Image (tube, rainbow, N blue to C red; front, side):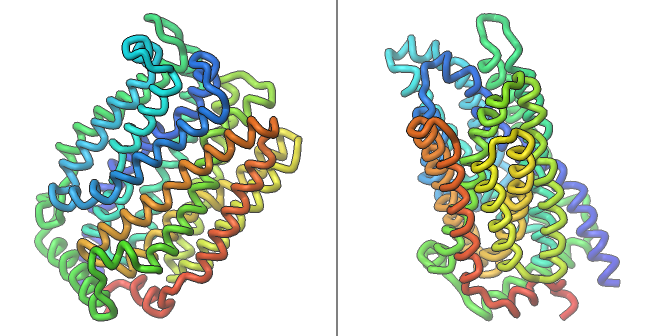
Length: 442
């Protein structure tokens, strides 16, 4: 009987929430990285150097860092529905503003470069709290046994946004009209969905299972009983306060692993269109080729995430995926054949994409309640600082050496460091496996 209720409840929640949350993250990630495609023409139009672009691309994560924890705490206070809607609408407006950098520069007297820096910083501040807020939101609906696969499905939005978004971005660069160049139309066209979906959040999302009219009473009872059991189980092992979560060495170690992952991920993502365009292909071809690594990334994310769930093991999976990413990125930086470079970046993206859904259940197995919101946000905000460091290092080293080899070797070294730290994380393996089992079986 319990199994039937469980299957019904999880099935309904999956069908109701996950596709919409994927859509939310799809437009979020698209707005975060579309600057990589805009760069193909924006740099020349605005007079930006590679280092200036890398700095501006990375400044997103500085704004993200300072507003991440406060935003996630406010999410818990005001409710996920209203706060996530606020985040999406505000970042959509700011993302569209990038199209009008020349006009803003003329109106304020500031240089294009400084307007670009300011908007990237503001975009990060607006988006802060979105991803950890969604991760925390999922803990209110799904027991631990389902979280890695649910997070992996949710995070499919990243490769999907690149698989679909990269060709679209390449095509939008060819648009001209109403006084706007293709790179400006790219920002406008890809910002509008964020604003529209943000308003959709207010209509579609529900804060708690008990408020869901589409769940039966026995389904709500099963969810609540299971989540309560898991919370008590974690608190019986160890209760961590909010402030302790922000200073716990395990949390800081998790943040370092995520820092290394994001250095490799964003360092490549923001420059991938430039790397491919150097092969001598058109903007449209660049878009389609840039989508290829993310096709492999999507497959790796689902396959490795499910295997991690089945075995109840996280650390070795995360370390293995980071090592794969490091090997692929390093090798891609050392070869000259376009086919080999793309193939090795496909290999690297399998590792990069697979890490997050296997990684996030680890801190979630340590923290509970408000400390979970703060701890997850702390890991995400500290880890995302490398989103500043990675692109800046790539741009700086490109200007310094004239090529991407040095930057890619540096990013590969970060991936390898993350793998080593992941292996040394102090998480009770037996407790972790027990948390991966359905609570009602006990």
